[in-house]
Amino acid sequence: EDQVTQSPEALRLQEGESSSLNCSYTVSGLRGLFWYRQDPGKGPEFLFTLYSAGEEKEKERLKATLTKKESFLHITAPKPEDSATYLCAGGTSYGKLTFGQGTILTVHP
Amino acid sequence: NAGVTQTPKFQVLKTGQSMTLQCAQDMNHNSMYWYRQDPGMGLRLIYYSASEGTTDKGEVPNGYNVSRLNKREFSLRLESAAPSQTSVYFCASSNRGQGNSPLHFGNGTRLTVT
View (cartoon, chains in turn cyan, orange):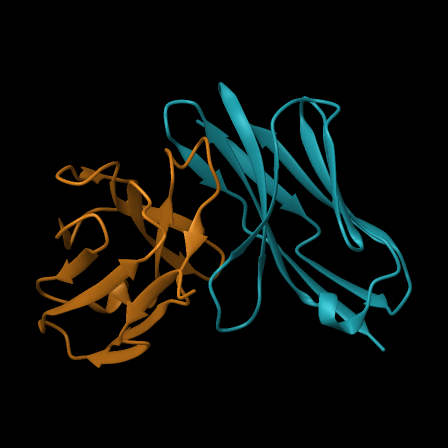
């Protein structure tokens, strides 16, 4: 059975305090590893897709990386507006997508 | 610039009542999906439509039906609502299958069944 596990469940940071979110996966036939951001009361918003181990993608203060077992979302010098729930999901070539339960990030000014 | 639009935003039903959740996308995507999101359970796929004219069950289809009305619209129907269907429902669309391309989500329908 495919599984995606995110840690920690919740993370509190001070503004400017860099950290990483973890996404461990066991997905048979992984085609893509997706990261989403979800704000309260909103739907998830797509951030990144990673397709192969060693790949990295960046967007503003966020950088996503992928290994054969994990993905990390690195947040450099976060700001309060980065506060959100971050979701990762593993997708297979036959169309199945398995979501993790998310990490709730709170950045205090 | 609307993306994926869901209606209604909020709904309260009594046990046994029926309702239809509406979803429309304006991105010319082939595939559309219905998910539910519950605390501690993550996002779970209810039904999906890989292309116009086709629908398939997802992980938690019991108690639901869907209709792919045309390429733009995909509705979810609860025939006889139960308290276990209290949840936030998200519609999503993608250009290709959900394992291969990112999903674009609506902002959800918050459903309470009493």
